[in-house]
Amino acid sequence: MMYDKFSPNLVLSSYTPTYIPDLVFSSSTPTYIPDLCHRFPEKYETESLDCAFDQSQVLKEIFDHYTKEKPSVRIVSQLSPKDCVPSLAAKPINSMKKIIAYSKLIPSIVSVSAFYGVSRTIDCSGLIVEWDAIKKEAIILTSAKLLWSPIDDSRENHIIIRLADGTLLLGKEDYVDYYHNLLTLKVKSTTELNFVDLRSKEAVCEDLVDGMTVISLARMFPLCSLSDYAGELCLEYPYFGCQELLRSTCHVSAESEGGPLVNDSGYLVGMNFVDDYGFSHPLPIPIILASLDLWRSYRAVVRPWFGFSVVDVHQLPPHVWERFNVSPTDSYVVVKEVYEGSHAYERGVQPGDIVATCNGIAIHSAKQYSQLLFDRSCMVTSSGGSNMFCQSFKVVVQSADDCPTGEINVEAENLAVVDKRFCQCWPPLEKAEWASNKYGSQTNKKSDFDWRFGRFEKK
Image (tube, rainbow, N blue to C red; front, side):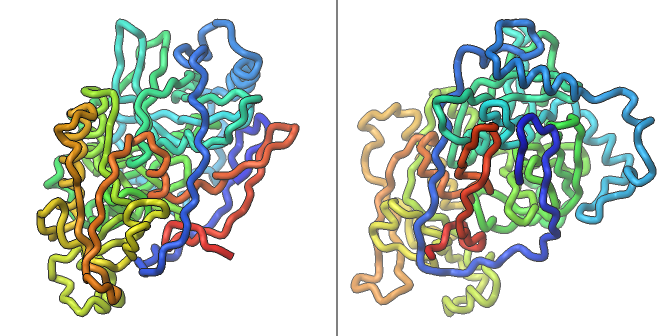
């Protein structure tokens, strides 16, 4: 993907994904950790570009350019018959009942972009989740990948939100969580903004069943247009990102990341993350709410970090689990990936090892393991770093290799969720590394990345 200076048009390479790769165990290789952008400037971040305040020259240029590109109310008269042909890459939403169901969410869906100088570097979508009528301030939930931007003190870095009517708002960082890749932004607006109460629109967990119809919603930055893609929910492990992600068959564009995934009744299932094959992977709303609640209560969130991800053995494809010489109905949890530099990496944990216990509790499912880590996160976060919860937190891993002891003990590190080591859980963006030129556009330094394993391969 390339962005030219001031270009309102994002050019995407077209492809049709043919498969989602199975998990294949392999020896761990170093994982790329992106350089994250400096904190965005405080001076302008709490105002609207549509307010006539004293803007920097960069913001003036961005504002002048995109106000000329505001969507026209006469856009329907400009359409030709070919504009109404459904995309072959996605299932079109042709049920009026479904469109009406999610129509209440549409005013709250926004486009969010990271700007490096006057150039857009990353496009995502977002959802307005709070509105303070007294402060004239809103909270927008989106993806933390917007912070994976080039670091250059000589250029201004901004996050800009674009509403459906073309209004441009400047975002200020609020909550950043690199483990779940969550980002909340504060924005000021002179007009009241529509918001979605996540709790009232949350889909009940019991209703999330394998094969249920889901719809991915997103907003494009150039023309503020809404896009929707239908698919089915898959209650299976993800092959990238944090282990709480689910899978769906919604074929989406990169700009859909950070947007909502809803069921056919219009209730929120989760927030979309997009893999390299163009499919949506939602992070469930209950996990998002729990993370935001911790942040609101303590203004800092800590997670125990062993340095590996896990998966239930029965979720593995047959050609993988049969190597364990166990039944797919057995309650085993195995290591999916080990991250370089972690305690698990240093202790020699390998993909395919079995997680036996966590703090003395026998592990029978990935969900149970995740819940234990979350409970520990709550305790450590609420303790504020006191000695009450400084005692060790360990897992015992049974090595799949011929280990003398047969077991490996790994002690957790307590890491704040703003620690960029958590970024190893996620594949880097296509343009994670940048080389700038005098015109303000960027080119990608290509790397050999194996998307099956979520890491770079050495050459």
